[in-house]
Length: 200
Image (cartoon, rainbow, N blue to C red; front, side):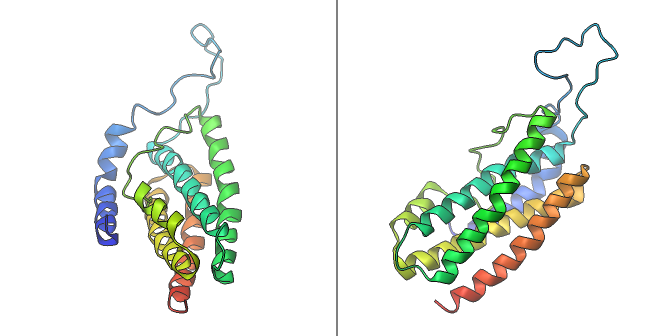
């Protein structure tokens, strides 16, 4: 899939998202209590606070998105002959997104939502295909550095678009704050990567 096709796919995702939130995820909200506890006869029991579909969607989609960014960074860091500035960027991506994954997984545990609810889906949100990842694995030196930057720009653009939807439609203040952090940080990294591409 070309980068233009990926952009079109992302736009289609954003256009369809309100309907997805209204229909597709309405049944995913946690309406029960904590696993293993019987609330059928105890009206005083406290259940986890409900979470909005928009918050759920952002977190369950962003976790595998971040995981792939870390995987891409690991690939480039294992290669020789890669520009040191690209290696530094890959390290920074790992350092930022690893803790964010931990935060989001903690939220899912608190909400009683499965962490892998959307893993493996084709979101049209900048996720690399198996072929994309194979191409990155096969590249070397400066070619690998350029491919990493090109792929990560697309990846980040998808994350920014998802985060913008969460900022606009989410309800949980912590989720919206993280989404804004993703927007701010990744827009800066996109600009850095575009600048690096002109120098390699």
